Length: 470
Image 1 (spheres, rainbow, N blue to C red):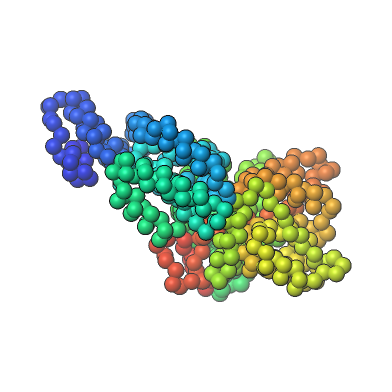
Image 2: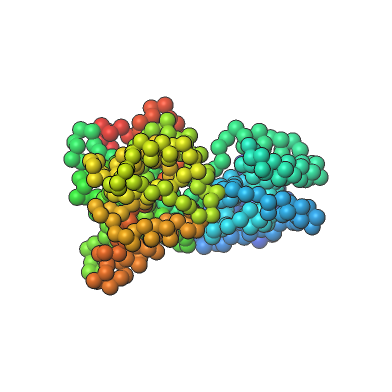
């Protein structure tokens, strides 16, 4: 075991020998405690011996929760807390996960910068010696760049970090981090997730290539690509049920709320895939959306990189809002002017959500042109009623859904669908939640690169040309 540790950390090759197992194990632990990255390497070595055994899992808990010495004085904490409390419109989960890197974080939501700071304040130093809170402050400063209203806050945070770097002798490491994060995109957080993509098969138009990705745990977006399948639309239900069952086996033992996403071409967006049955072979089959938040995403926009800059801009605007205002579509109404509506949407980047007046279908009775305009403008959120003639209740329900933090919208949608499913039989089919479609499209969670031959296949993406078999 000492030899294996020494192959990872040469400094551990001179561990004192006693000839008695217990004493030598204590020497190994003591030596690992003295090295900056010793405990994680000890855990990795033990995992080689007995992967996922109960003792190793317990040791992992101890390593993750190892005690951290207090480095910040009370005055330093008060100063940085005061500055962070003044920060507005920053993607808190984004900067938290970017600063944490590969460190294990809690599965629960973090609602504010002060909470994120305090969470990281209890973590050990990074391998470069920097405190995780210093990395968090740097990511916040980067997020504030370009904001005149927040310039003083950014300068104050930068000065606080510089002072801490001088105190700890970490000036060079801090400078290196600044260079690194300004040249690389921020790692975006994601929940445990199953993404299912359907695209028409080029050689067999009646069939579809079904691809899927699994995000096993919450954290930076690192989905794992599964095996593709060629299916007819009639086979999608059974295939999705098998994929969800497989994903649940990987999520087993991990508390949390996984999300399901369907990446679909335009002509499939109005299909109610969230109501596909689970446990379909039994008398107790229930709809997919009762167990998971289910949202739609646009395949065409994911492949059209010329719209991605606007998409990123609007998503950043969306995540900084406390609630969302919808721009309502005017299709089918008296005086409808499609050019004026699309122009207003494109010109005002503050508009991050649209509500369609009809399903996104082609023809005079559909709102396909409106949804296409919204996607080109970068709008990440769209809702509509799948029925040809939405009820008056639909507008009231949408307004209620949009109240609250946008990142929590999928959970609010799930509650509305649960309400529809559990309504009395006479009211069930008329309930707005039964017909609500939600496109909630995060530009940081790309899975398809089949339309971009020059894209990086080593990233967390994957895909095939439509003509491909598998």
